[in-house]
Length: 302
Length: 302
Image (tube, rainbow over all chains, first blue to last red):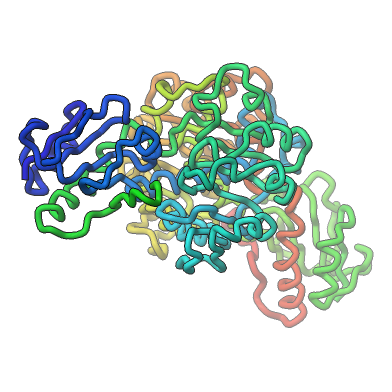
């Protein structure tokens, strides 16, 4: 099994390919491609002898938009690999907001009387995970241990282990009144664009915190700014924004109860090290003719 | 059982007294005193017919310092009652620091390149809980679910459920090299004053985050400022400070990796509501002649 690694060389990925039983090769000689980059410099006219493309991103909608995902070979992505990282971030985001760390961090004096009455606890609350896949499943045991009940929304509505109820995505409209706080972790597809709009922000409890770890366009940014100003939600923790990167001077930067982090729920710094074990396993599986982890479904768009 | 509630009237506490089987009474007619305040306005020369004093604070060293705790009656405090609140805060504090929320919150531009490399994950780390009582025991299942191993230090060294090792407090010096991060949750006694001093900060890994949810004087503030400036620890999350409240202009306010919250791990706002179930149970137990929850040991100083 000859595998090309591109666009650059990464030690974690190269080692994983060799440990999985592959050998590193030039693209023209390769049976498979491990692509640790975005769509812009992806090889044009990928030769047919490339039977498998392994992407190292979890969210690969830019590859779909660039019409790179074809049905002439197998594609796999990194969905679920970074789930622990992102789940940890999402839990942290809920805690930052509810426990008012953003307020304490904004203060340079001892504002106990101002901040104390605004603190809420996460334990005892119900959190809805909208788009409950790998990240959501990694969140559930963390939330349970923190004293939180979970409501899940997924595509099929098939019950998610540990969720007290699971709704199919066709019934997403019902979830906004079923939980105290909301984590958006759905894939970015045409159906999920501006999933959280003005009506949804109106339907949530005005004490709700919203955490977005999916993609920026799943939340209607202008509607969120309006809802925050009107006090229709308690706050938002956004690791992804629309537009992204969020431009200097954007109104979101100035809202007291909006916590913006620059797309670091899954840090680029540790990405290849985290992905290496999955790559090693997929190389082994491809050689053995077994089903790959995180195989892309070209027709579903993720 | 006639019980005086002071210094003010609180509905949560009054209801708990009645539900536990007591009746509200003036101090001169009472068998017991529920004191929802500090030592300053505590009744002078408490009459001997007060056979039980229930304090609503968990940390009662100011009462000891004021020599109010005598052995002529039973005393109980609120130790352990607020454990879930404080444990949740301590876990949140670790996440805020490791995931660099303080850096994101300090930014008003999209600083991905600056912040991404500094992010660390909590999962995979080992956390030492120094002073592992009620708060520590409430932290352990939370930390386990977050992928963290725990080392505990307590007075006796009796193994704490869920900790991979437990040291007696006489061996505290060993713990600083046994964990990645540290939560200080020990009672404030003569022995724990400045427990975390310059030598301890030197002994910790320079990637360590320190969370103090105990009392400010358990950390030597000047030594912490020096250690932070010298890069000997990664950061600190302090819900308690020495001096407290932390005065305006204190050097701690200006350190990038020090997160200060104004003593809100256990919020005063929800204090009596959280304590009410314990008070109801202690009233029932006192009437029944049973051992009280969180009985104070006058000779141990907590």
